[in-house]
Image 1 (cartoon, one colour):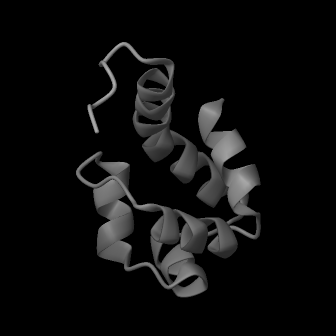
Image 2 (cartoon, rainbow, N blue to C red; image 1 turned 30 degrees about the vertical axis):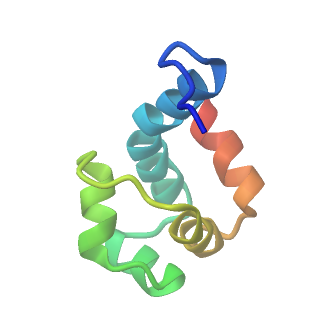
Length: 85
């Protein structure tokens, strides 16, 4: 199966999320009154991995993103919508 071209709409959407996710994760975490440690406890995602996401050193896969959204008290859909903004 051939790869989609880099200018494909889905690729652009994924890049948008990837660029905005670290900042939005921090904003949502702070809005919920959680430290990185608190989010780690609530989500089951290690504080170290959350730090890597914040520094754009890691791009979480869907299961990890679902854990983070749960830790923030929102659905995965709500979390991804927030990351788009």
